[in-house]
Image (cartoon, rainbow, N blue to C red):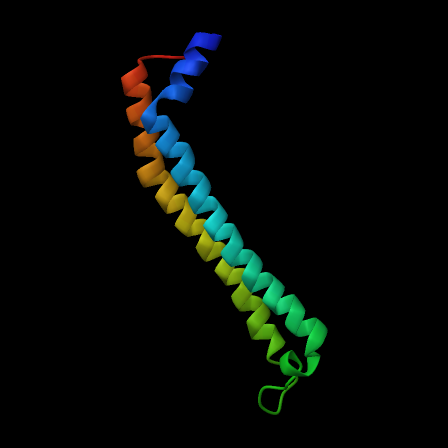
Length: 104
């Protein structure tokens, strides 16, 4: 791509919307995951007895299902991102490509 083509893409309003929406959405999901993860770590650091509480008469503690839930939350957030990326973000990309013609 030439510099002119790059500038043409950067100045396209739909491209700017794509970059803005995608960045905002990615940061939102990242912050959610960081809050969940660090809440877990801070609970371990400052209140280990909370997650160390046994469930029933076995050896499982509260921390095990909470840890598993955090892993599931990360997969769910990744799935949410992929779903939106494959829908809205791919559509915006397609529209930008159609407006600008075949820039490769």
